[in-house]
Length: 469
Ligand code: UDX
Image (tube, rainbow, N blue to C red; front, side, top):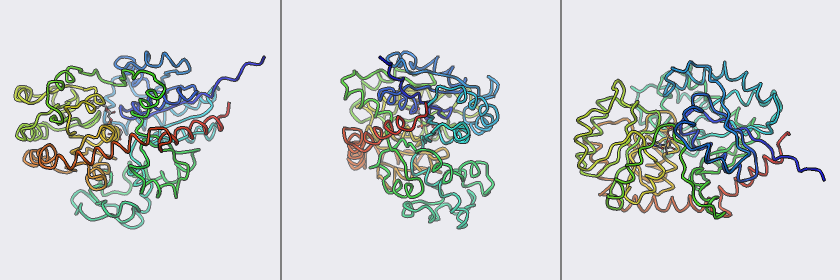
């Protein structure tokens, strides 16, 4: 009797950053559960960190079709990478592209899912003749702004600088006219220069994305439907399968598999903070984290510290060792003075923190993963965006979803104090109610027949139908 052919092998190639690596590992596991084989391709730098700090290898033992594979980003080992990611991308275009081509030509890969932010995999896959799905780990809203960059330039709405009036409304992004101001556009739009390297990088999105077999987004229909319907006018084949971190848990729970202990962290998690949270009253703690890339100055750090302490609220604050510009360590005065109501850690198990009953708010940089994790757990937010998509996401949190406050472009202790009080006390019920409703629709989207669940099934069918080997 002839043996059945092996399942198609999908190569998943995320951006070399914590957020995208995290969500793409969840996608990998979902595809493995859907009967596909997966090669997870990361840069050497990410590979080393995953092997050191995460439990990826043990997690995937139950999926023998999963492989973790490394590729060079062309940079020396001691390059800081971190928020110098444009340098990393530039180097990858030159050094990683030919290696990636060799890998695809060497056979065995049936289909590619690559982060659209990398750019070159689409050209290579087209040359080699392998179907490629683009995946984006940013919000549909921000991607839609990228799609509209040519129109923003044509209409004269770009360029402008940070010294211009940033409250002017933006008209060239259909579906967002009601609330989008200049200050809510991705931060690079303030450069005053249409030849800005970021504008150059993103202005081809509306022509590149439709070239791919499909576009996979880590969002759910109910969260971004007005924007998704606009985007489908340009790029019809969109799969909304988020929030990915919870989608995997939902699928495992539906098959009766016990929920695994996830850790995709590129830093060592301090689990003590969960013990600290156990001792705090329900919904009393503000969780504070600015993600994996953002850095703050010592002055900003002190404004946050005074604002938090003066608000009288309890807080759990993640201060990454490399996050205070120019400082090797968290200042001692800050650690000492926080002991009464605060807990400070280097890196937290964030999903578990946000799911903890003691957490009642999230002061966040509005990275897309953090936003989705907060939405899913029904935790209202105070947004202090750092760069890129975060400027857009934070506006949606305040104006479109009514899930909290957008504190962009300010860093003042009295504003921080007042905003924290407003979220945690004055308008607590209103925000908790809105957040609970949104969390409910996120959960529905992942259930049987829900939007994200159906889109994932369609994606797996389409991968099987279009695979080349
Ligand atoms: C970057 C961009 O900043 C973001 O806007 C974009 O959407 C994706 O790439 P990052 O700064 O890493 O992301 O933020 P975010 O997308 O929020 O991802 C951070 C991830 O790290 C989250 O999954 C979060 O759960 C995790 N995290 C963060 C921890 O596990 N522990 C922490 O202490 C902090």
